[in-house]
Length: 239
Ligand SMILES: N[C@@H](CCC(=O)N[C@@H](CS)C(=O)NCC(=O)O)C(=O)O
Image 1 (cartoon, rainbow, N blue to C red):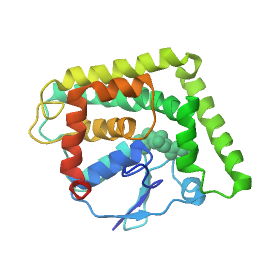
Image 2: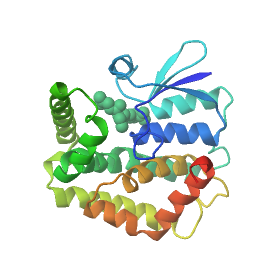
Image 3: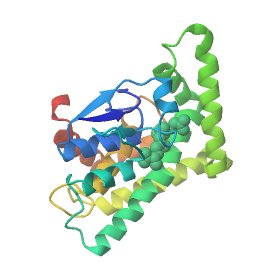
Image 4: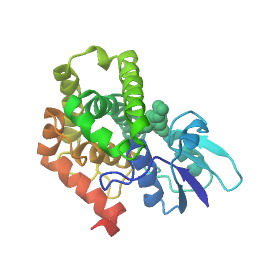
């Protein structure tokens, strides 16, 4: 069985990381059995690309990066949710997934780690169970690392209002594209764009944090309905 290396459940979500939720969404949609591996710092140190998630196949082959993992599984016979898409739909799907993973994700990083109020929730969720002496050191080190990454990515050079405006535009684009359809590309069943969009939207909407950006996402009725539709399909045991 595939070994799935991830961070772990938080706030009732399949994982604290939207990328790990994305992979679990795909496993569930494609009916692929997997074995969750508990998180340790060694798991992260041994990750092929230094990030989570990664998988280890039955023959001991480690693969990092959700897109590469899913492509590998599809090449080996697993469900391809995009099989019947036209070239135009594939192009739109690629562009929208890049927006979600390369733009919306970073606004989410700021929202969790940069916003002072929300950082208290992040701290509680990730560090409060560490021994008292290392708790603050570990939390501050991780916060500094992510804010530095945001600076080099570029959004870290904006003020909070400007960062949240980028996030709102991304969510508005998703809401406008979805319209009153069940799935983003007008299909009867989810495609990879739905798998990805659900992971990042649920990671934005559910954690008990507040910001104008989150408030905006929660006010988009079709986005909330989409998340509930995907939850019911992929995580029926949570109902
Ligand atoms: N492109 C990667 C992104 C994965 C990623 O950014 N993972 C983050 C968590 S959301 C991570 O492991 N960060 C750990 C670190 O940077 O130390 C994918 O699709 O899997």
